[in-house]
Length: 142
Image (cartoon, rainbow, N blue to C red; front, side):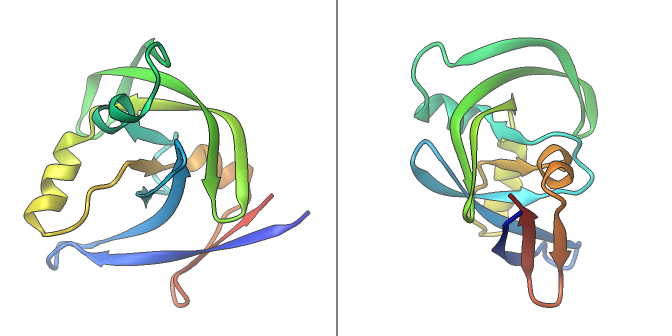
């Protein structure tokens, strides 16, 4: 099995902790996503996805999402034709879609660029992720 090494960006949340960002490519465009080992699933921001997708690509989900401070958040899903993380290409990847505007608002107040979503445990586990904090690299097995 081949590995892919992806650079990470460490951002300081004004002395209130750190986030790791990873570059992802969806809809043929590059975006930053938060690398979150505590998130069970990969999630994309509803507002951003709606601007980029074709009509009808977003499907309502009967599941209420937990986390992000609530367990009553309405969620949707989308099948992404391709999600690219470094050299790893995931075809027809099903992802959750939630309103992440509060995260992007918080980033904006810290003068940080917006994120398209959160890279979660579904991808990290299935691709045997190893995070090297010293070198700021993410290793994924294809």
